[in-house]
Image (cartoon, rainbow, N blue to C red):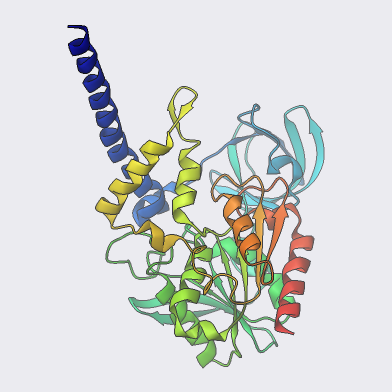
Amino acid sequence: MKRRWLRRLLWTVVLAVLVFHVAGGWYFSGVIHDRALSGEERRASLALDPDLTVEAVTEATIVLRADDPASPPTALEIGKLFGLRWEGGHGTVGEVLSVDGDDVARSFTVVEGDPPAAGAGAELDPRVYADPAEAGLRATDVTVDEPLGASPAWFVGARGPTWGVVVHGNSMSRLDNLRWLPALHDARYPTLTITYRNDTGAPEDPSGLLRYGETEWADLEAAVRYALDHGSEGVILFGDSMGGGIIESFMLRSDLAKDVRAVVLDAPMLDFSRTVDDNAAREPLVGPITVPPTLTWTAKLFTSLRDDVEWSALNYLSDPAGLGSVPTLIVHGDHDLTVPIATSRDAARDDPSTVTLHECPGADHIECWNLDPAAMDALVTGFLDDALR
């Protein structure tokens, strides 16, 4: 009788664990779809999501408070130049003027709309500039004929012979890397800042999904061909986040990879599977308990079946023919909660002769430039000058 009871208990536990993983895995595969893969959901998720409160504002200063005072020190207290968004407007915040408890006073400029009122919600934005003119650049709108159709791009001319082709991340906006362009222009690098499938104004991928380089590399190839056809003597590739994965996929797959002279990556997503693992490990499940690795594995299995994701194909650390085949600079914040800095550390460790990693203390995702613009501009342009020399 006792053995029969123990067997029933064992089978009950096994069944409960199985149901938990099947149901939970199916649910979290939907989370992966919505947060990372669906172009439509990604566009919707980029709406204003305030995590700061405006305490006071004058013509030249603003006092901000983090809504979660228990969070560790943030870019609000250490960053040198950020965009600031609020309902109905945006501006820039610069020098930290004072810190009084949870209140941080910073220099402030309104760029568009009315100043925020006291009590309004706001959020910092690494994308400081809203268009090329605001960054002091004269950009020409051009069209790149990509495999799925015509896609818009910005061309900023300069006197140098080698173009930079600039690839944004899964924010689906060319504004991601606009803050880097003035320094590249001053260093005489013409730049072509591209869009690709699923972006606004560009063709939709037949699946409607972001593929983290597996398909988008062909759009980058078309942009590189455009640069070469219009007089560029080879190219440098500059990408952030998912854009880094697109670049590395291009380096593995394209015949035009031979024309790449150097690569600069800002918090690149070099292994999509590990990025999902890292984010899931912080995803709340019940109370302080987060999603266990076995549930994440099950969710990724369901994602493979539902959305045709081949996880191994999105690991760009596994093939030395791509990453590190040309001089490569990676900048990555050590507080990045979107893409784990561990993948960039692995890249630098595996290819120390060609891959240089610069870690940015205190920086979250794609925030290295914002914490110290002058230092980052000098680092990138110096690296490129040395690489091309």
